[in-house]
Image (cartoon, rainbow, N blue to C red; front, side, top):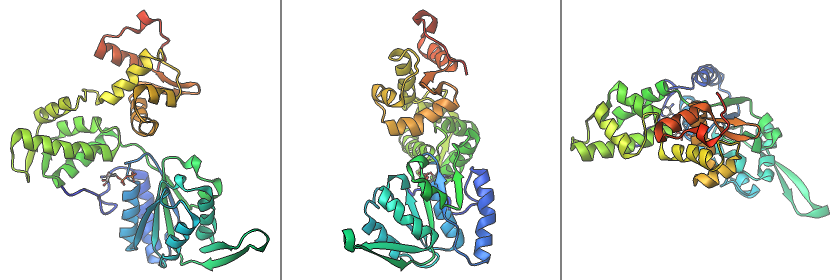
Length: 332
Ligand code: ADP
């Protein structure tokens, strides 16, 4: 199955404010034949940072080189990437916070002066040589901007924070991308899929891929055109054990652990992750934000707590009665 990526700003759904700004900057930079300003995208994995970088390059008709923080682990590697750029190229560095500090420091002069400072020799005989670089654009993406050195962050002229998507936006994405996958999805089942997508397009697309296999196997319809109605999506979500709130087994594990092992909290993210058997990364970037948006979990200064809504969910789903347990309720 071909993977779907919106190719232009027009096709990109959601992130309205970012799109509105880009719709001003892109044509103005293009008409002045200038180099696009260095741009910083902040947001959880799967929200569309790489897609937006591709769209900027496409709309400007510029070449895009894609790399990532973990790959650029030595100054020599970074220098090789920078010296291979052409005037106007766009360099996209994903997970830029994972670049070592010395590499982040090399970017200061590269971004500001389009120069590369190379140190030759060691100790007292060490000399710095400055090489000039072509004027290029750096687009960087991260979920952890605080792990980037402040002087690096300050060198980005445009900083965009991507929001989690609303269920309505994800519904639109699901119907549209569904068609590209040969799935014709009604509005109501599309909304059920959206609710299970955690505000993240990548999650929605993953569900769609699995839905296609499921529909194909259970309905034996020709692969090019599958009609997806409410019944089909209900069966599909049941198979994945996703409930009517859109909560997955991992979400429930997280809430139940918080309730059973930590008496509703507060508890630190690391302890909650360890006890729930979910990685800290995933808990932080996928499950926790979704549970917070649903109002079932809250982040306090002392740690994560189960909210009143979270208890009500557990009560309805598992017949748990918090009063019997003498737990403290956090109202939201
Ligand atoms: P990130 O770089 O933030 O991790 P990506 O840009 O790789 O996220 O997006 C993940 C997937 O979701 C890609 O397949 C992409 O095409 C899709 N996607 C992201 N944002 C949108 C959107 N607004 N509309 C449709 N698909 C999207």
